[in-house]
Image (tube, rainbow, N blue to C red; front, side, top):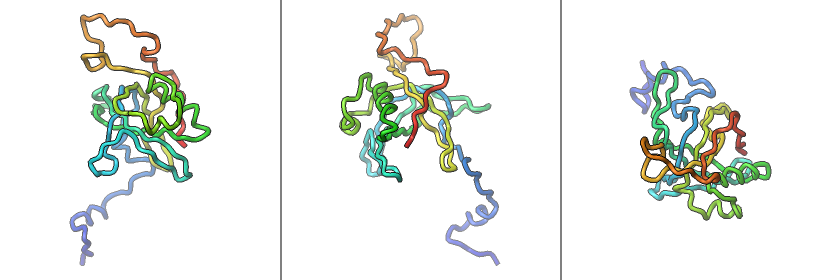
Length: 194
């Protein structure tokens, strides 16, 4: 006699399925690479209201501002023999407001804004949507779960009239040094999460 459950046909599959390894399940991970992104608006509460940031609190009562980075380029990244679609994927990033993290917060937000942050209050009053950057994404395991995280920010701005790629046959005017996209560091300084 089989024990029937309210999950019907899934009960047999459940009995035959192996438990996932701790730190596994990386199917939703954005591949490690360097990406060009734009800060976007998301419906974080499922109520149809789009927001470009969210103030969150950690279990240790640290506050942070979560932003949403939409990948523009590259369209795909090769992982092994498979091309993974990346354009349109969203990478969340939290700027944790802790004493230890303030230097990194100031550096990374200044990179996104193209200027220094004047006050912490700007984090919740400014418009994030539309800001662009080049970011490095790495994988990290935290509390047994593997996640994608932003490892660095570089300035980047798309060229007008295109997708940010150099157009063939047209000479691009030189950009002032403050607007030139910096090369990713050989070993990017990690931005700690607290």
